[in-house]
Amino acid sequence: MQKKSNIDFEISEALDDDLPALTEQVGDVPVNVPVNVPVNVPVNERQKQILLSIKENPHITALQLAQNLGVTDKTIKRDLQYLRENKIIEHVGADKNGCWKVMV
Image 1 (tube, rainbow, N blue to C red):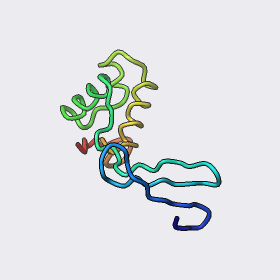
Image 2: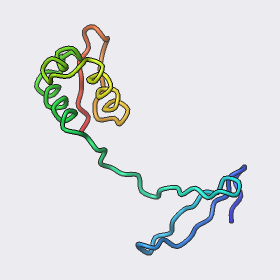
Image 3: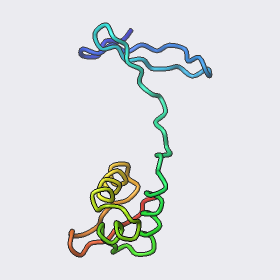
């Protein structure tokens, strides 16, 4: 086992395939560290509609999205935050006159 600060790492055989799995141990509790990070981020139907609307009109506002999809602006802002955090979209420019950019 290799010692790195207060965290112990050990390599063990993975059960599914012949690739080693990395296990992190903090104190007495092992914590699995994923070898492969998922590439596809789950997006629900409303978020797909948001992406389509942004592709059609990059200058669309959260209020316009809410009206078009029949939900509250708070719901749209939560969806936009999720999409930004997962690097699916980004907002370029100022809040007042910027535009959305779909990254995928």
